[in-house]
Image (cartoon, rainbow, N blue to C red):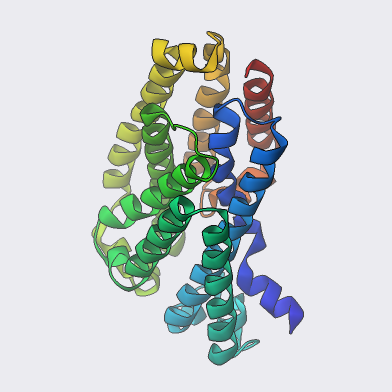
Length: 287
């Protein structure tokens, strides 16, 4: 049972919650022990809440997951865990995550509460509205980034929030494209919203957000306000890593037919993983 519970929590997806550390890193406070501890608690809170959301999704989508070639192995769909067990786990994680965020501070509590409400709305309603479904996922990443800044009480750049949003849109649209092609004629039966998309439409949308991601990151790194705030003018050195990462992801989506799970793809593709690590190391060194 423990193995099934562990699988229900989807720990491999916790990597997404690393976005909460952006506030710590980009504020130049990565070596501050007090801020490190607060950011770690924030990360744990979001891991708990995201796993609670995954439990809720698995309960709601149990019938669809049983018809999916990959999702049918999930604990609930496979019958390894009962709905009651998953409900209790989800409730405990929700309460624990909210209490932990409340302990850190009221600002973080409000952001985590907004994150939880957004995901509940997504599970029951927003995921069935074309384009809004992907924008809702992107908004979740923005709330993660905002939470990291609020937790340590530092100002977060609007340009960085916008970059986070369009980058998350880019990844979300890539995932929708992969699902549509992978599931083919059964796509709408597994995810109803896929009937509203087409490969051509998704390619057009991906083209828009690809350019937007690069441009917003360029504005962030070259902004005089940011240079003065962070006391460095060398953030532009990280631009090639961002461009390569985006191009590499596009290559994997279009030529390798991958992109179903950006997190899994990041961990499985060595060039992409190396690029992200080098980008992160360069940011830390510069700041």
